[in-house]
Image 1 (spheres, one colour):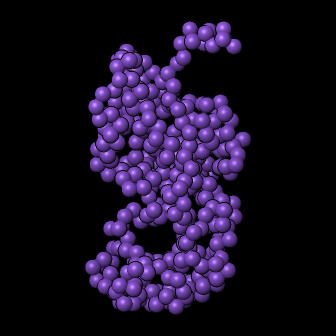
Image 2 (cartoon, rainbow, N blue to C red; image 1 turned 45 degrees about the vertical axis):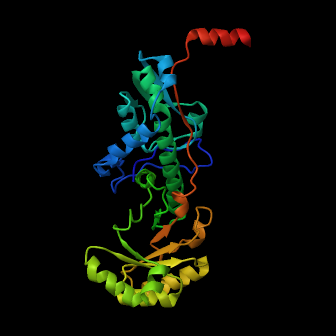
Image 3 (tube, rainbow, N blue to C red; image 1 turned 90 degrees about the vertical axis):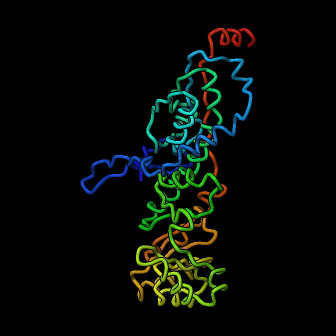
Length: 329
């Protein structure tokens, strides 16, 4: 996961230490943009086009004189979504220079000071055309990254060595950005889509007749390269799934005490099987589910109902307006 700068003075976000390797040297942030599929720029172009289907009267008012604006971070959290915002500015004919790297934690002090995270240059009309689409993407992706970062820091503070993951509860058409935000924040994406991993849930089991037959049928076409996960609401379900060859057992809607007991027994018998805890778990309740026998804790809340971060894009205020304000006051 990306290097996140220390959050001195940031509250309520936890203090963040840079990631290091075994020798103690800082680990550079990965270039996550290289993960994105070829069509991602086309999607950004469609979002941009949706915001200006016909006239731009406001743009007509300001014209095309060269200008610049500062992109201000106004809330504490993790900056994420830089490639997508960058592409919006490029679509408009602007250039963004980022003053802090993606994954930077905007501290409470920086947010209070409205510290700039980027400088954007281009024709005045283009700056304002790109503004809202870029900010919408940035605020939402940063919100996901901040939630993911908070959850992972909580896990490490409690000494739990498993992974916090998102789910497929993403916004239609925007899931790529939300999954990207999970990675920037240091969490696991879980499966990206229906083709990424087989997940057999209650509806699959009820429709096919049994867990064992569902796993066998899935394996016959998924082959060796695709993992199979089974949603289990009882220990009997989990045992049937593990015995049938499931790779991942999702223990769904368990109480913390029952989860730990069942996970311990399953790991003793099938140590190679991945155990996932799921079902209404949030960062507030997550510590109750920490166990050395639990490998993954998934939270739908990370990409479903997350808080957004506040950003704004401002051109410099002319001195004449500053003088006029001073006279009025």
